[in-house]
Length: 178
Image (cartoon, rainbow, N blue to C red):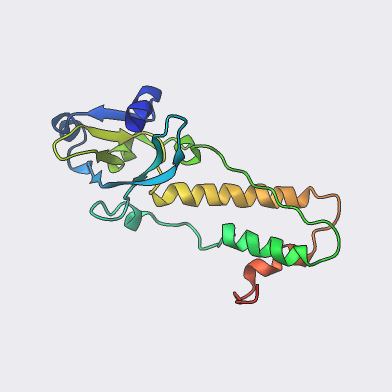
């Protein structure tokens, strides 16, 4: 159902395997799929996130060259910072931003489309993603950079100077006491 919705919105294209191989040739890489249960719909059916395997068999993630090795804070890092800040005098707050379908907001260059192909069953239709997809390293890379830029901008806009305690715990060695 989700793949059909992606086709309807233009986020994916659907081909027979023969059509896909004719159009994309040797560049076509058909990945395995998985699913992550996200919750339950009102009718009781499962809501799942499709997981595109950009590593096994396709080698897509292995061939993505990360431009830098800057580490961005992850959710556990941010939770640690908030725990540390909660022990300080004054108010502590955090902001969470969850962009629905964030990875699908990134258009992919047409020459890279055949590297984001999948199918539900052997011999079934082949779906080609025209936008970023969950499971391809470049989507996570660009969204982590965007998140870091947003975080830095928000920090710079604070009405008081941002002190070291706001970022120091991220770089501190992990401790079981935190």
